[in-house]
Length: 370
Length: 95
Image: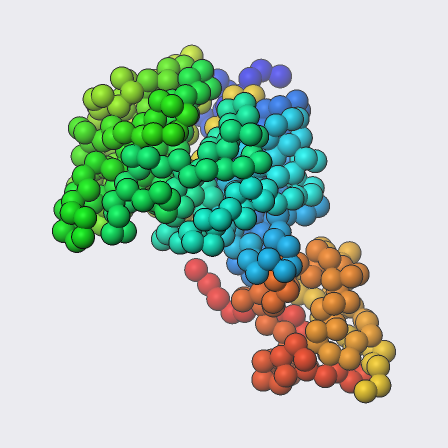
């Protein structure tokens, strides 16, 4: 079977799967799966026989993990979802991230309230990763506007990076046994201390497999005009690390806003990174004119990419997991909006068009070539 | 208190997949709490749809004992007698 581009689109009202040939000229849409139930995270697992996973976040009856072994034609619930021990005192409120783990069937899952779970059987059973879930800081983390969520899981050999809103960035260098808060240089705008040890509202972290020491972070920015204790905190929203996340520095200079949610790295060039700046108060496109911004020098300078997008009167939000990039030779970016549009940015984001314009509000978008 | 032998549990459509499609279950219990304990033992996935990780009834799930919401009686300690019905209903909400 020829390679195809697979898009998973998690929405407020269920999961959609879109497929296209590698030309990406036309995508066929299947769904919704799990009608009416919100999907906050998906995983396209290319290890062995490809599998699609999705969280199904039912506000009435609880959380499920869905699995497909036929590229999205059918999904079935796994035998169980992550759950806290009964005497823990915490109850699962949402599933925010699903990532491939250490071996073929190993999965990692970040949840709300912020905790990490691991499955060694493809999602049928789960155990809590206590090194972070019961970290001494865990009961001090506070929920952000989206809830107290563990939204980012990045693996790099024995290193494991986690992003928590609001908890900050946590790093394990022993395969997930122990974790330390690694937030030096990561600012916080809603605390008296502008650079606390932990508690930052990290929105998303991205990395490149060929440059594992390099990380990019979209942090909660928009604090340049803050006049409270500690004074203004400009440019704390977009950051870079070159030492596996131990220290961070701003790369926000040149962007129209340092507030945003997603951050995505080019599949073939660790110096090329994409963000979608939003107005900090409305969390919508600046001036009603959406644009993705690209840096090709690791955040040293930025270029606005908006050809094909509306020039005015467009006030959507793109959430933290709602932008991704495929890994074809000339990759395309994809982002989904809270107004239910799914956009494609061909040629690395140079030319944009809307693939689907009336989906439910989009929470997450993932892409893979299979 | 005599142990009831015939409590009927009405299962909403959304949860029937977790009890082999049954719309009604019969079991023996003397309180709502005992009903949930028995459901956890017999149908753990169904129980997970009714109660969260801490064992509390989910925020958007209502349990009625006959025509009364359990909160208007004695909550989970509401006593049951033979012939009582437990009705599981999702809360009315939208969005």
